[in-house]
Amino acid sequence: MRLSIARAVLMSRLPGWRAGVRLAAVMASRQVDDVIVVGGGIIGLSIAREAARSGLRVRLFDKGELGGEASSAAAGLLGPQIDLEEEDPLAALGLASRDLYPDFARSIAEESGLDPCLLERGTLVLARGAEEIRAIDRQASFQRSLGLEAERVGGEALRRLEPSLDPGLTEGLHLPRDWSVDNVLLVRGLGRSAERAGARLVEGTRIECLLVEGGRVTGVAAGAEAFRAGTVVIAAGAWSLEIGGDGVPPLPTRPVRGQMVCLGPSTVPVHPLHAASCYLVPRRDGRVLVGSTMERVGFDKRVTAGGLAALAAAAIALVPALADAPFHSAWAGLRPACEDSLPAIGGAGAPGLLYACGHLRNGILLAPITAQIVGRLLRGEDPGIDLARFDPRRFETPMGGRSTR
Ligand SMILES: Cc1cc2nc3c(=O)[nH]c(=O)nc-3n(C[C@H](O)[C@H](O)[C@H](O)COP(=O)(O)OP(=O)(O)OC[C@H]3O[C@@H](n4cnc5c(N)ncnc54)[C@H](O)[C@@H]3O)c2cc1C
Image (cartoon, rainbow, N blue to C red):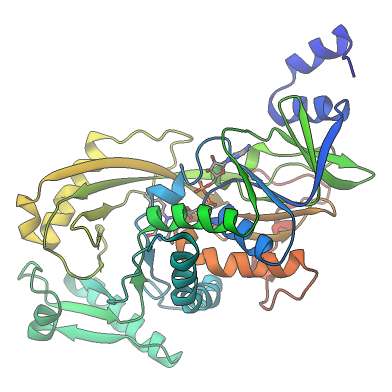
């Protein structure tokens, strides 16, 4: 269908998704899928794999490369206990997801031929000074009251666990079930595995808006093309706020930059280490990831001299031998955040639409449980977990718009 010149001029003056909504209204549709997933990070790929494995016709779009954003920038800590010291709405979700990891990692390795290197060594949380020591004491007793394994270790016992530590560090918390995974390999494996299950993965295609007909989301628009599906799942990470439709305002997400320094190869440390100043995550190939900053600087993925210097100094203060490790590389990624720092999982806006975004610092950890929940919702089943705190409708205002504070 041809656009009138007046309409095209009008559209060219409308920013972002609003212009897309009008363009979509005049486009002819193409194939119909059961599910369209917008975003090929760990969340979107895990959902695509899960949905395809249950026999649904799935198509996933990514504006760039699969896993090219936060999911590859991450450190891969699977640590729901790392800073758990009081009731936390994320705890149950994180612990349930961690329990799914051994099977998740093993089946992805089998399906894809890529081992994501799940490292089940346990994480050490380190404390310096009276306040931090009190905090790990509180953590230990709170976690044990929940039946979780959390062992206070100090002095020689700590040194036996991790001989590379700075001698000034004498107090720690050993969390034997907080693990790590190589998220880059995992995301690559997930892509292969989702394709093998039948999902079609489309890179380099930016979804501009949702198609909404009769009050229902019926698909998405990309450039001059429309793609239809029974359900659209938005898993576009920090960019989820760019995707809306007629009468369906976008979910207010925002980016939180994290810078990362990679050192090595080095033989130390052996465990993932977590301290107030930084965390260290050893990889199987000898690299050591040092993270990370939490910065609200918009969609700016540059690393800064200050950020990298602070991370390197903090790493050496924990493990002095790292002063001699070669510098390997550095990068930054954009964590997807909702305004209350909790993820948004479930339906909102209109029938035919699900969200799975805003996983902030825990998207690698939360991928298996998010995929399981969204898979159940797609099949019309009970999600199996109380989603009230993660309901994307919590951002809707009485006027029907979305709070953008
Ligand atoms: C430095 C750093 C360290 C981290 N460490 C950890 C950790 O140790 N453990 C942990 O659990 N989590 C960690 N995280 C958080 C974790 O990386 C994220 O929560 C997770 O990757 C979010 O996954 P996602 O799929 O939602 O987003 P992303 O990985 O950002 O994927 C979103 C995808 O959507 C695509 N997209 C966006 N807009 C569109 C569009 N309009 N059309 C089509 N495609 C689109 C993007 O190209 C992107 O590929 C860390 C993050 C950072 C930055």
